[in-house]
Image 1 (cartoon, rainbow, N blue to C red):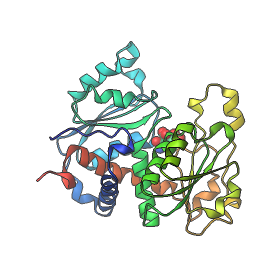
Image 2 (cartoon, helix red, strand yellow; image 1 turned 90 degrees about the vertical axis):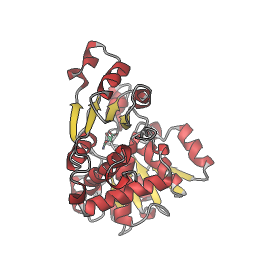
Image 3 (cartoon, protein in one colour; image 1 turned 135 degrees about the vertical axis):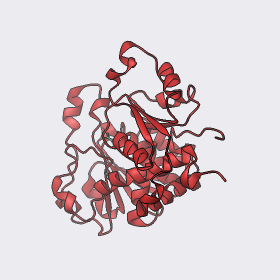
Image 4 (cartoon, rainbow, N blue to C red; image 1 turned 45 degrees about the horizontal axis):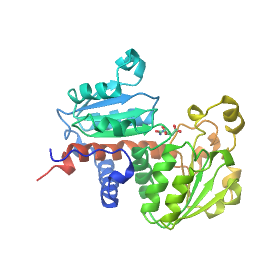
Length: 311
Ligand code: NCD
């Protein structure tokens, strides 16, 4: 293999590469049987030091649908981390057992650190409140599928914009795709980090911060709902006070555009009422489904197999 590539943050890939992953993911979705054996003989290590349903299982499913195999753990307490082993040592060992590592870790920067001890590709499946690049790929493939484009949209992000890593990765990427206007809907305590706001404003992006979704919902082409990130709060009281700030229901989207798409990385707690699930604008379960296909494309790219095989 040529120089090893990793995916730690979306900026690790050019816009062309991101677009190609989305298009490859859509082709795999259309015709999955063609890809059934492209990872024959390959092993993916799935190291989850933090809870996960979709990211872990969609990666496992992606690798299995490509004909590869999976090993790993979904609870760090069942690994030698519980005995005090360092991340560096764990990675050095797993590096010899597999061809690709997907990891999620509560500490920001842990997957980046892992790249220093790995000679195989490392994928960040979420690091603390920092980044979640493969959720961004999942979001992009869903947007492309339902809206047919990745630019020229008015986009609302609603909920926990402070700790929500999916928001941090996606907003940067949508700005790179040329989207110029974002509505940031959050309580004062959970606004987007200032450093990220400054970075976006420098790129010429207009950020409109509001407290109430009802004030802007009519404007939006896409609404990205998020969960209040309980596990990142320093005290329970603040979480309890903020946890039900937003509850999207049918009434709140009454005046929204007909071609709005509503996304949510899931899991949801209370922030979208079940009654919204049957609204044609609700795309969040399609979104989690598309995550498998774009991750299949990503695995192929990093292992240089199938559609990414070299000459
Ligand atoms: C997200 C995450 O882990 O950041 N979940 C996911 O990967 N689909 C969102 C969340 O946990 O709220």
